[in-house]
Image (cartoon, rainbow, N blue to C red; front, side, top):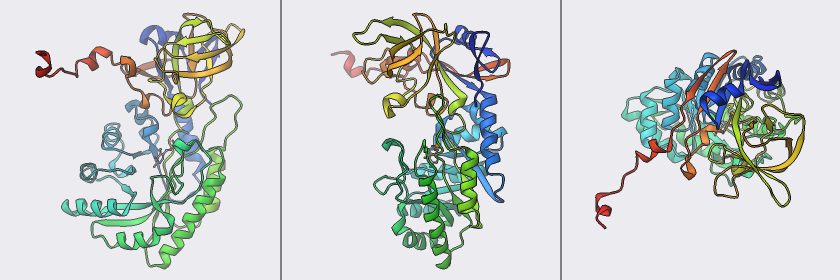
Length: 421
Ligand SMILES: *Cc1c(COP(=O)(O)O)cnc(C)c1O
């Protein structure tokens, strides 16, 4: 459920008419609903309320906007970060360092150093070499790093290949077949408190079965590690829950997920950790856009909008579907291709789609754009960086400014030795 509904003939975000934001901020522009963010954060946490010991860290790569992170911090969420930049954001948003988990396959020595200085809660180690290096960095600071070992369980998550992370050919974690020996060796590192395991098999999962298979494998590994004499106190189950991108699509609910976790992992006697990303902000955000013109096409008309693949990359990256709705639908329908202005054929949001009838100057939204939307934006084609806004009841704020091409141009220079040529 979200808070983007038609009132008096016009789509509102909570109590704010989207035309008001378009007039005042311009388009394209992201609009987030705070009530929806809060609702999703609570639904997810409530679904896990039966677990005696748990920790929830929002995977901030899904939406790292500072104001969004502040909402999550206010809801008691920690952060799962994958770079020093994300760590700095989580801290700036007021998240407690001890509630921050550092994931990622390529943590640099400088990033480990910084994270240890900040005393973050946990490192999720992705390889034996990374563990050895983390231990050395910790010892140099006279510290012991709390950490878990990320396992690649070799399970097909059944999602898009580019967001599948738990197959043996994927770069993430250590192969489950080597887990016991690597754990034995890393547990001896003086700078590490290796206290458990982590996994994350992929994103936009539409079925709980692959997760259940993976969790079952991890449960067996926990038993083996304990039999080998290791203390296992933490298991990080990652994120991955999918969200409905199309009207009427049904996906596993957080409650069903929580029930499965309780059934499969409930007797592990560990602190269960979670890294939800998409499921919290996806349906809490839309990309607001204006139709530049409707161009005749041989088969279908092209609705050329002022948003493009640099603002919302998911359709071009993953062939993703985003529902497209007029802000003031007139009740008529049309079949059209929806495209942006960028000079790439990949800058296409939809082909031959049945949509609200729109014409030049009309406002529209791409729905379910709150996750992996603005965070992937670029300035390709020297377009502005897309701004972001947050609505709360009958007020809203700009939470990320539009960055104009001139500001980016100002960061570039021609070397003197080219000038004379
Ligand atoms: C991306 C990521 C997540 C979040 O994934 P969602 O599918 O957005 O829930 C969680 N953990 C790790 C390690 C990730 O890389």
